[in-house]
Length: 269
Image (tube, rainbow, N blue to C red; front, top):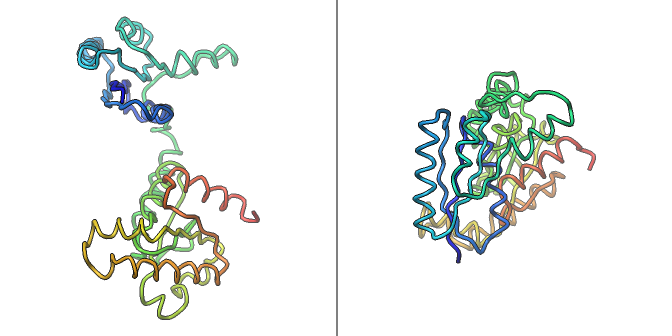
């Protein structure tokens, strides 16, 4: 296993640089030590970043990878005097697009996330809605939900709902399917009039057993037999109600969200 340090250096929060870091997942034979340096917006901070890059080079015996989103040309040029492999958002993507469109790009921090615009406000409104409608906490305002996730406890509903809200501004509620629903043999009554908004999540019993065992080790709730029964019953309820579902066992929240977005934006599919 090769060890390399990767720096995420930005004049803002570093969220965009972090997103570019997904490229590293294509190289599983390398172990990456991640160092995040947000708000690197002065020459003094650039100097500190250069010192850190030099130290990492000495520690690893190889030059680091630097993923950078610095709008200021002077800061970029100074940082690049270091011996590192640079993935530069502006140099690679923004500047060539500027030439193609014959327009000067905006270079301020936070532009990629519309921090001061309406999109940001929409996302925050969606996040508040999702947190208030997590785990079936309230039925108030449920008609405003764009999607309602259902599934057994600990199958990934909450992280997927929050990701949909934070990244896409989707008002996502989620409801756990519980023993009372299994005994009754139907979905919670409040959900019956929202069937067109519901999307289900399921999970392999062995994975659910492992997740639940971390939370409540040795309990009936976490037992493999109970996990198998709950999943089978939940899938039966969703099948009877005509609900589409996806298996979260080996899918990331990004993948699940893409599947859900495709479904709610193209409901006929």
